[in-house]
Image (cartoon, helix red, strand yellow):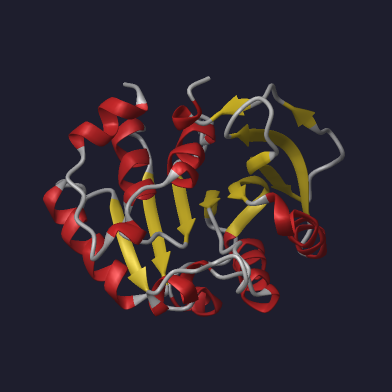
Length: 224
């Protein structure tokens, strides 16, 4: 089943176009290759449920929990969950991830997927305040993602991410602070002459230095 087929099968409703799947959404799904022993999956920042529901469609042996701070996209994720009949393997939680211990036991998750906030106040021009809050970069809020991941993820397990190059150094510094080591990188470009648009990869909790960098990925709209 390829990604186009997955999204054709999914019935996704959204409060507005800013919460619909983006290149970051599809890139995260494409690099999320689960191992045989990764069954309990956690998505940090699940929005309207696009990633969690798509992954549950692709991998029939996994169970996914999505955390979403914003009430409106969370409400739509519940609608999308029911419309796609995946209630037996996917659930969504509407809360700040700093409260993760109220819902998930320590070191009980096999793999984490996330596309955390990465836009600056200057670069983000959205007129939607909830979209700004959900997607605008703030180092303190970004740190919550790593703190929650360190709490929930089993030792030596993987955190699969997509992030923007602008604040990637800050991202890596926080990752190391919370004992995550970068082990795989996928770099996406809009075209062969442009700069990188997205960085995807794998962090391993208490992992060693064993970095693999894969060939460049060209986003579909680039015409490459």
